[in-house]
Image 1 (tube, one colour):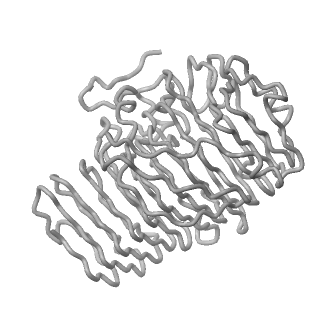
Image 2 (tube, rainbow, N blue to C red):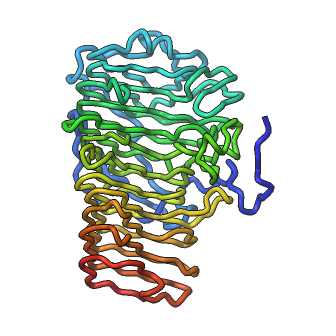
Image 3 (tube, one colour):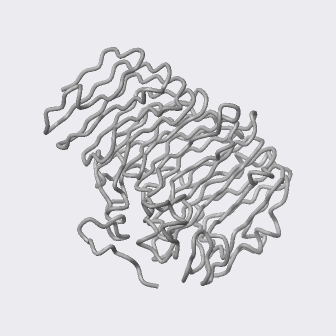
Length: 446
């Protein structure tokens, strides 16, 4: 297979470019309490030592979960090295995982490197845990891939590490996952880490990505609280290296199967949920950078199947087509930062900071920094029934761009305390704001 570089090195996004800009995140965000769903510590809020550019040093998240914090929630705790898993990364550990992973069991991976050569899937099980103490997960060599399936190489089958539950047969009870570093620094690496559907209570924590996702398949996470009482918390997750569009990988996807006429890498997203989500999902302390099919993409179902999403203390940067995109009932974006300061080829033609899709949503105490503006700062779509924007700061540098678009069909929109700055160009209200809310109060432009 040959890689398509689009014949445009200046505007192209290569693996080398991404590795040079691994800190594609911005200003530090304020802390708030963690839920600690399964009794584990909520963990400290990271401190950003970088700046608002992709050259920033960024933050360091905890790279471990402690077995003793979670052991009491499970009948069985298995040390995977003692069970026979190779901690040196030479032998496939999937056979050992398949042998040990059953209901009411916590699998604990001590510090080491663990190689997986196929997907591990469990549907309809009860009370599962997969945690590492600074463990590194890697996958076997991939020589060819079509869509979401590896067709040639040491790794075989679905390009996915773990599938715990499914839409029609979700997991039950407790679930915990985390304490892993994904090593994607080699060529042709990166696949979905976890696809999770549950009727219970789940915690996904302390996971980080090293190296760019460059197989053009599904992005790292899908989290679906499938029933009204289901709850999932995702915290301390660092996936700022992002992913390449499939056109720049060995993936044999076509335009028709990967995003319609635009050729977008459909599903190569940072984190997604499910169209029929009904429960509660909280994303906290997450750093997301440069994904070709939305960064934080958490939109639930219809009016009768809408979950609730909260995105808190998180930073998103340089994703196409939106960096943070939410919907649902009483969903929120709080204390977040969105940065767009890099444009990646024709396949990243629009990088909207925030999009509200449907239901009732709010944005509070959030800043948007567009040093390379390619999309509207905030979009309130027609299916939104109620929206509140309060204490939002927007900076659009050098290039004219609309800051706020409110669809005429959107109901009950309140906009208060919004500060819009346009360094390098003379922005005006007619240029910056399209549409109007029911309340438009204390909006400053300079």
